[in-house]
Amino acid sequence: MTEEKTADQTPDENRLIAERRAKLRGLREAGAAYPNDWRPDTEAAGLIERFSDAEAWGQEALDELGERFCLAGRIMSRRIMGKAAFLHIQDGSGARIQIYLRRDDLPEGVYGAFKQWDIGDLVGVAGRLMRTRTGELSVHADEIRLLAKALRPLPEKWHGLTDQETRYRQRYVDLIVNPQVRETFLRRSQVIRAIRGFLDQRGFLEVETPMMHHIPGGATARPFVTHHNALDLDLYLRVAPELHLKRLVVGGLEKVYEINRNFRNEGVSTRHNPEFTMLEFYWAHADYRDLIRLTEEMLHEVVTLMPGLKDGRVSYQGEQIDFGGQYRRFSVAEAVAEHYPDLANGDLRDADLLRAACAKQGIHTEKSWQWGRLLMELFEHRVEPQLIQPTFVTGYPIEVSPLSRRNDEDPELADRFELFVAGREIANGFSELNDPEDQADRFRAQVAAREAGDAEAMHFDHDYIRALEYGMPPAAGEGIGIDRLVMLLTDSPSIRDVLLFPYLRPEVE
Image (cartoon, rainbow, N blue to C red; front, side, top):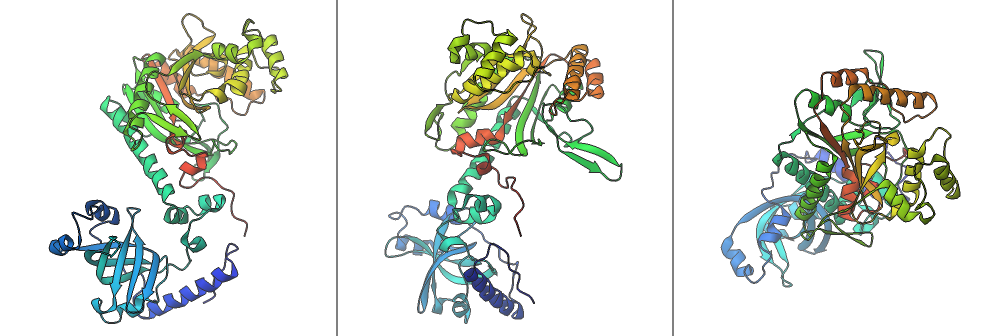
């Protein structure tokens, strides 16, 4: 059999892998390769927690207990001393526990076989608990079995995987050798579970909507295109579930949510990944102000449910962010006036004034942009990065809010908000546009923008207009970026740190 080698292997690694393959061949010949009949009955973390008090659980108490425990884990270190050995295994709980082996306590030949095993091998261990002279809780094994042979050595003599791209590309190794990575993804799961619990308790129904669409809609974004062979039909990967969720509101499901995967064919950065997770929810007989209050309440609860964050304060990249209390609220126009003193007394709906201000800031503009788009460019350029504490921004121009309801008092503005934390958008919500004729006009404007070269502008969705023509109750809807929220709650500087398998270019062979 030809040995397979890959470009990432050094000569030493190639030698170690060859040695391990030779050991595996011996296991196969003995009929002992990759068994599947070992059943652990406990985990290391549970044992350590239960017996952590060395005074209450000294050696005498452990002997009296007399309980035998069965574990399974990966060998992370070992020290062989003639007829005895110590090793540490790490199991599915993420914890490591010490194992004590003595040749005479094991079946004939097992200890000799163990000495041929390697760091990284997966083993099953059973025995009673003991404490070493230093007081370390250990399992005094009377049985140990090799469950899976690791053909590749763990990196850098098991002190950790440090190259960032390799960590993302080989997340399976990253999880083994960097304990804090495991904690990040446990926290991610806790966040999603807390959000589900919050919405479920308030009568929202979790639903699922299609991930392949005939027409991309629900957000201004460039979609991915795929093809259905049997139907010979081009389809788009979902950029947002919004229009399908609002169809459900039309159908009488008046409080719905989806924790969904979206796909946008756009740039990759520390805040953007081509596929990402969003919470979207819709609430009949509510408006954007109701959403602001609900969002504030949701984040208070989610943050305080996280271990170590009971006071609602989060440390993120050196900033202390307070999710307690009421968040600041101000409009886009107020924000721009505050951060651009030269514009404070000007007419912030004067397109010429705003275009000149953009030029002064070196912001590229298009001739077709009206005052609303220009105002938003100024906001995003200077204001957004400075919104560190949770801040609700309202008063968005209709021009940049094609699915939002117009404000009754000022039709050029939308009943919309965005929530910013640590200089980035976390949530976007608005009172929904349920007027089918107004929505149709806005779709036409989006089509015109698309024909003029805007690749992110929306298509005209005739079926969605038809749904609105059956009557959608007044409603409000919101999207919250799960990945960005988890970044905040795990002090992660990049979105790739909170995605188990972030997008990366293929490896060069």
